[in-house]
Picture 1 (cartoon, rainbow, N blue to C red):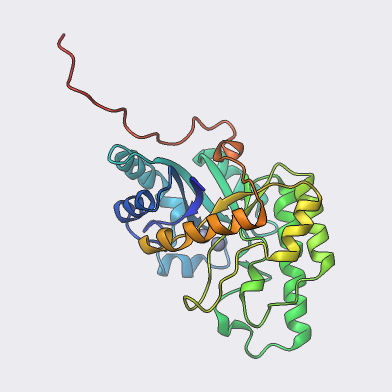
Picture 2: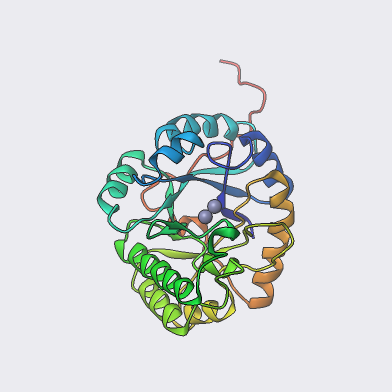
Length: 278
Ligand SMILES: [Zn+2]
Ligand SMILES: [Zn+2]
């Protein structure tokens, strides 16, 4: 694994750019894409303001910061986004992505039908039927996300499997629908090493095993993301992902596969020797 398509910075819920870049380099990566959370949701408008989740307003500043950071590292940095997908917001998302012109865009379903997947407590009082209905809604949204063709990457496809109250509710029908949608789409699913909740409680990668097989049966390929939020995540997750890919026999796609018309991020500054005499 040489390229990580999915990491965060302090422009959303991650750590400062210099710390993240140094840690990614120390973990042996050649390239890292910073995909900060971005939501255009009207429903969470006040919460977004209160918690400073305003990447829709601050992404240009981060772009300037990444250009500076690229001059101080041997890594190639990509200016990406992890966009919250919400059915009905497609026109707003499309206009925003066209205007912002990121290197690539990840699409994520973090909430659906007015309810967030996390935190863990969110389904404590829900009945079995309510949990199943939520998981159905979740996969409906994932299929719509893929069919929208708005995104280069589908992030953590079975996020609900990482929730103790929702785990095991993903069905063959869900997997078949999502895999079929991806097989017909430009949107590439991600192998994601992120874990929600307490560190160490889970050690699962998305997509979980039967889901991985549904994709592979259809010849769908993957990009790879650590979903690092803290500097130490890179050193923890990159080697585990590496082992996982080797054991599963997965050859990930290069980042170039999702760059589209982008000029390819911020390459490291050219090796500057002694300046030539005029
Ligand atoms: Zn996410
Ligand atoms: Zn993320």
